[in-house]
Length: 215
Image 1: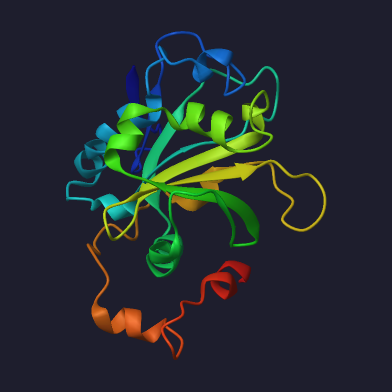
Image 2: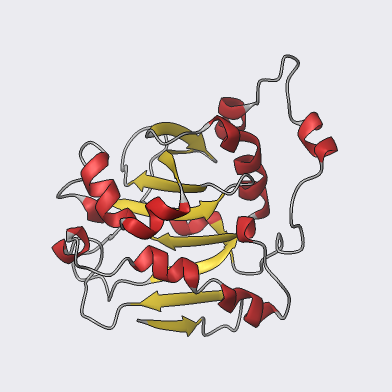
């Protein structure tokens, strides 16, 4: 594995397998003996702090791979970068309502499927393999999904799968990279104060989950 700094010198690195893997369509990603590239990329997240010269909290980090848009797409690479500030805030609001079951969720005009993971679950099974085995329609079509991994305020991980959708509401190319911000504007905020949570809750304690996703 090799982690590469983005050529523009921003807070963005890649994890690139040393073996030849052309995009997520490669069946090797659905084998148990293939390295867990998402886990390895997450463990390498400290590269962002090195690039920025300051600590980056885990809730501000995301590991992302885009859907494969062309059969000849280059070598598989996982992007290690910061979450966009608005995405991080929205995950902080909705995250407590998510669990280990796959659910649909509208996020900035795109419909994702997501579920939570413990650190042990992430380390034990590759997200590529997990999506292929657990998400209906993904097995044999993994190249159509953009994937993103980050950690919630309560310490659980959340895995997001964005299916490539060419027509209708939420049409997209499976580019999960839109969740990231190479300038890392959110890095200086370790957590959100209790007063912030009170501002985003409706009376009765129900989060604006779907409304936030519709914006």
